[in-house]
Length: 355
Image (cartoon, rainbow, N blue to C red; front, top):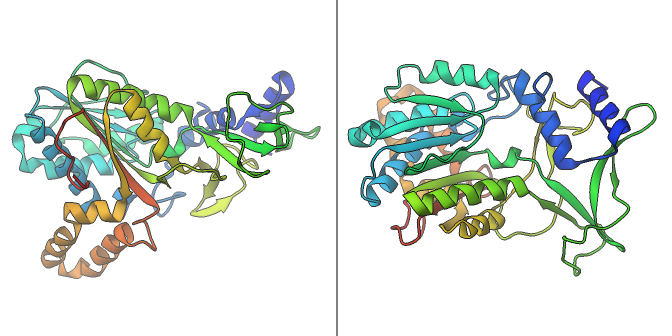
């Protein structure tokens, strides 16, 4: 057990078991030894690769998506372009490069990067130096009463979840415990949670609830409904709700034990897009989708963009084609990854989504 694991075990000994959500929060965001506080997790040398790191087409198309949403809503005044969890800044750099095709859009922007990791903040600042638009960082989403465009790519999968298991007693919460030697493990709370329903689920069924994700989407939706703009969520998950355990740990592009060495592995869970769409409706906004990432990118024109890039970079044609295929094919990211758009009620349908 590493040092953070020992501290978690001591915390459990002092105050009792932790929820899975509490454990995830400590393991990912402890300021001294948390996963995001101590490393850059992205890229071939990290633990996972996100769509913007695969190829520039992804970010460029999202940049043009932002421009079109902004135009469709009458070119609102000073607009906040917010990215949640900006990684190494690759996606925002690609968005802003594509948006140069619309100088009036760029001139209206203030870019806000919501990032808690000091390691990643430094990388973002380096990548976006000289981007030509005002930049600032924040540790959390904050409303400032103006039009808002929010991009969240592989952000919601890392937000903490609670897990509940169906037992003869009802839905009992899964907790993180420690034994006499300080080894972490899972156990069920002895009493069922009275607020978790679904009596027809079979014994052993697992239900995951991401309250933080729903609350954030509802907050953003409320701003969008009032001040215009839009939100685009791209992540892996399921479209229609359902039950099943999806919490996973990844290290060096391979699955790992979630409890063995906290702070050294990435923790994530599949996104419940139905819950996020419901949260958007609760905030007064309209949800579009979710649809598969492949369908979304094809509708935005990724095939034509790939062909253009290959014509101008013939020595890179194979890599460009491979990146396109990885982003859109069902066997790769095209189906598991999904897109959900959130717009004001009555706004024109967003690009890439069925009208």
